[in-house]
Image (cartoon, rainbow, N blue to C red):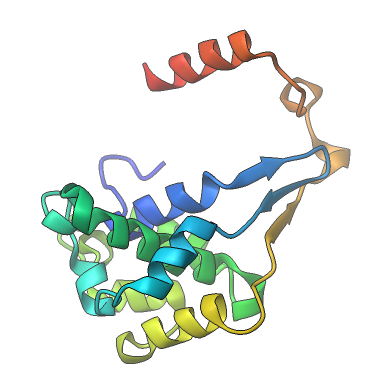
Length: 178
């Protein structure tokens, strides 16, 4: 948890979009690409990376459906890129979130989502970030799905993955939302 602070919207919503494509299995969590986001990113001009990093929760790119579609697609693309082992350093995201959680200065750069903290998440300069992300996601070769291996020898049996029926799913989802 980040306590009272929230990650900048491009990180918060980007991670939510990435994780919404997760498929949990007994040995691994697999996260595939989001085809609808790729299609949108191919068809529209991207927000400048600096603008993506500065979008706030009261911003039209966050609230207005017509503009938010691009924001969410680009936030997903940014976080999928940042988490992928193919881009060199998936540990950047956990390190960034830990630094955000640990900071005492609410006005600190990590808490505001400014360009420098955005660059630290993706490992690219603002001038190069969109180009690198686009090359990775929209290039001739589709990126591999993200695979997170689960340490099966250390899983508490109470936390083991199991199939649940739709009624239990609804109840558990409602419990999370309350």
